[in-house]
Length: 144
Image (tube, rainbow, N blue to C red; front, side, top):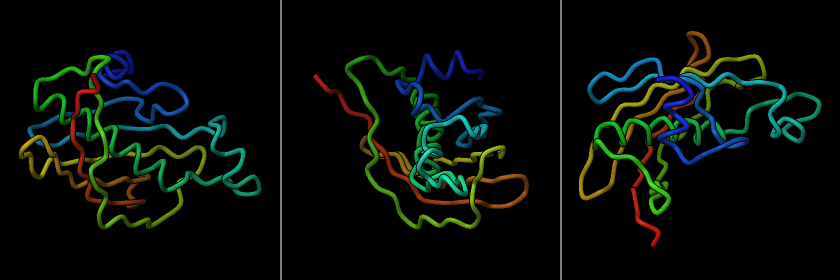
């Protein structure tokens, strides 16, 4: 899935779109990448002397990939009256900093879908190193 398909499925845009390409979707699993660039606005203040991707941005990137998986699994497309919200974040752990020039490999597995709530096991790698992991929950809602 290239950036054009991602833009068609996700409502996020710069500077908050955090998925550059989906490498694969196989059953209940998805693998995607986010290329981290020094030109991104968060690095102006986090931290000027040593730029590091904020942990909440890593979680958001994993959530966007989870949203893509949920949409594909459910066979849905968001319209301008639908949104996907975080319903929970559990067991978030950060193992190494993500810095400009890194490529985040985001791996997400759908572990449960029930009553409109989706639960995922998400991991972020830089190279072979685990950078972050979390259990994410999201829900799709109409915003009439």
